Image (tube, rainbow, N blue to C red):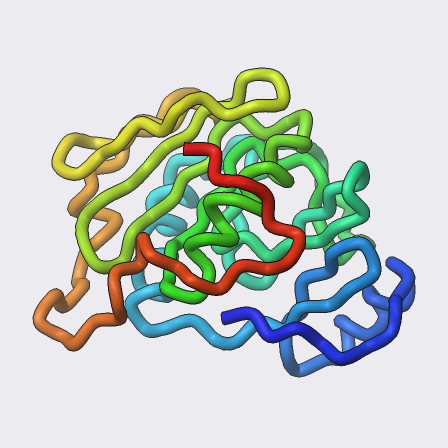
Length: 211
């Protein structure tokens, strides 16, 4: 869930300094901060499941996967986001607190963020030159939507519910992931949140739906 911060405009340097000391993560949109609340257990489990598969696939290569606490910077929008998972295949600068060249970004949908992930972030991530694929993972059902980037636009999503998900964005070659692997150990009998496809929280900067 996102909570607008009642703060005056921050420069990038001020934001990075503030964020390094903050106990709460904040996304940065051209000077404005938005606080992020913690993820649910199911959200975390799904993200860790997929990241485990990614790490095994990337082992020994030049690509690396990161989860939850690593920012991506979009220079053209003066913006920083925290994707749930991202993969980068360029050399890492250990002095930086963010990445700029992901080839794959994954967001796990929740009621409070689904609209942002489908609108605002969809358009923002399209501005990342290196990005090739953007995946949206549902929490209430086994459903993954994969969008492939074509120049500065995404194609209509490919929907995976039973078949294996195939990711082609990484330098080491294609990765085939069984949908059941992504949802391993998820207890579907636990009380769930409202349908994650119906996120209602929309930031003022969000644009129009892309599909």
